[in-house]
Image (cartoon, rainbow, N blue to C red):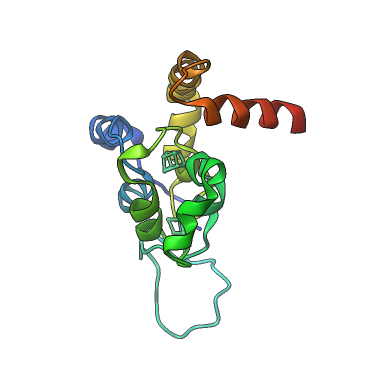
Amino acid sequence: MPLRIQRDIKEVETILNHILNINSPPVARCRLLSSGFGPSHALNIAEDIVGHKECIGCGNCIDICPILAREPHRRDKTAQRTSMALETLVGEDCDQCDSCVLVCPQVDTTIKNYIVNRRMIEVMSRLEQRLGDEDEPELDLFVEEAITQA
Ligand code: SF4
Ligand code: SF4
């Protein structure tokens, strides 16, 4: 739902890469780098929310996170479906897959395109390197299931 004129990546590339390189859910910070609500939302409210960047609690980031998919018991801690809940439930165990950013309706398309075009190869090769790691048997199972369902 961001504004039509969105964040110019050249303005934020350095800080964006810094955010995406941290072992922590990146979606909230990417949301704050974005342009906020556009004027064409269909919410039935009187308040002018154009440009607001808050989490709308849609839960998309919670639903897509591979850590929470592999370890669903983590979700027992809270029923909240916000970026704050994601940070609490995942924390430093974040896989840095960037999926939460890609599914967030409050993140600019310019940022999503940058991730897909410039960062995904790195993400995939990092995950591939971890396949077969004896400390992470669930990752192998998760990838196997994803391939079977594709
Ligand atoms: S593992 Fe992926 S989806 Fe989950 S918080 Fe980290 S970057 Fe977001
Ligand atoms: S995906 Fe939804 S719940 Fe997650 S940060 Fe974005 S608006 Fe909030």
